[in-house]
Structures are given as C-alpha cells and as structure tokens.
Image (tube, rainbow, N blue to C red; front, top):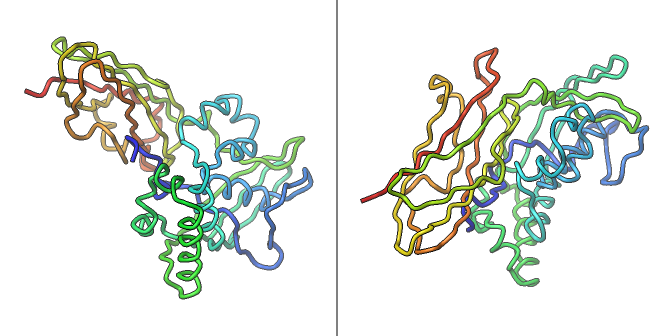
Length: 297
C-alpha cells in the first residue's frame, strides 16, 4: 500500500444509492434544477461514499465553494478511481436510508436521515485492505470474481453493516438545491515542519492550511527528501497548539508514526489523515500542528 493510502473504511460520508420509502425511490441519473433537496442529498452522498469528490463538489453550495476550490477539496480527501471506485459503488447499492425529519422553509432545507450502510472496515480483509493499487491491478477475471463474491454475501445477509442518524442542511440556488456545509464556520488548521539541525532533510507540504468542519476527515500530504549521501533514520513528533486542543484533533492514520529510513538522496511522500472531533470547545477557530523531525541513533 502506498504511504497513507486512501482507505474507504475511513469515510464519514453516509450513502450512495439510498433505499427510501416509495415517495423517495431514486435512480442514478443526472438531477435537474427542479429536483428536491432529498434527491440532491442522495446524489451528494453517493458521490462522497464512492470518493468521487469531483462530483460531490459540484453539489456543494456556492457559498462554501467560494472558500475552497475544487482542486483543494479533492486533494484534501483523495479520490478513488478504477476498480476501487466500482467496488465502492457496489457496496453503496446496499445502503438504506430513511428520512426521519424534513423541514423546508423558503430556500433552506434541513433533513435528518436514518442510515444503514455496509461496514467497509470489516470488509477490508477480502478487499485487500482497500489498497487502491492492488485492487486496480487485479485482472478482469479477478475483479469479476470479487464482485460476484460480494453479491453472494449480500444475498446471504453476510454483509456487515453500521447504523446511525445524520443531519444535513441544503440551500436552494439558481442551479437547484445544494449542500450547505458552512465552511465559513469551520476550524482553520495550519501545518509546519521543524527539522533538527543534525538531519539533512528537506520537507515540503502539498498543502499547509485547511478549513475543516467537526467530524470531517481531511488528508495532509508532505514530501521528505534526504539531501545527503548517507542513510538517514528519523522519527517525527506532532505538536498541537494550543496544547489543550490536542485531544480534539484525532490522528486517524499516519505514515510517519514509526521511525522511518531514507536512503541517500531518496525522496518519499507521506500522508496523514485527521479528524476534528465533534466535541471541540465552542469558539475554537484555529489549530496549529508542527511536525518535529529528529534523528534516531
């Protein structure tokens, strides 16, 4: 697996094709501007679950999109492609969601869904630990066999599921209903690196500043280059400021948790996945994270 591979089981997105009461039965087709908020919500969740974040971005409100362009949004989350995306869509076909609350006032809508979806984490074993490179490298015969196995498990009721409820807000624009994520009220996070003088390293960030909502995953990528003609053995510590915010920023996945070795002149890319916890104290606006690199004797 690539460092910090994009694991589907890390998703917090809820659904792709939702199985709803008759009034809400939907097909996977392009929505018109006249589509209602539930239909647009389904399309957004479908794209998000499948990690098709380019499509998901198009269904986000213009107010949010002014704060974050498509390239940034996609880069923060990582997008599945190829057969891995097909597997995600396969699982999504078995998701169930029922609207348990729907309030529409003028150009604003609030929808609460009861969700039941495949637990992709528990399926990670037969799905090659969601290693995108390995999944996409399977032969056509192997891919077909894997999809057939999932179909069989579904018919036998062997697909593990997780259940929960989630609220969503939407706004009506000229192009139709769009998800309102309220990024303006999000937490601003910044990242920097400090390298011990004894280490001949060059550290560069793919992106250093983020705006994230609570309970929303985002990815941080950095490249580290050994500038010397000798092997380097290093480790990194993550410092969070203010310090009392450390417990509210979860490090979900990190390619630098263990000491790392770089060969002479070698350059490697690493990825970390973070989540700002939902119980973050009110009024928190900014968190700074520093990666401190030190030599391992």
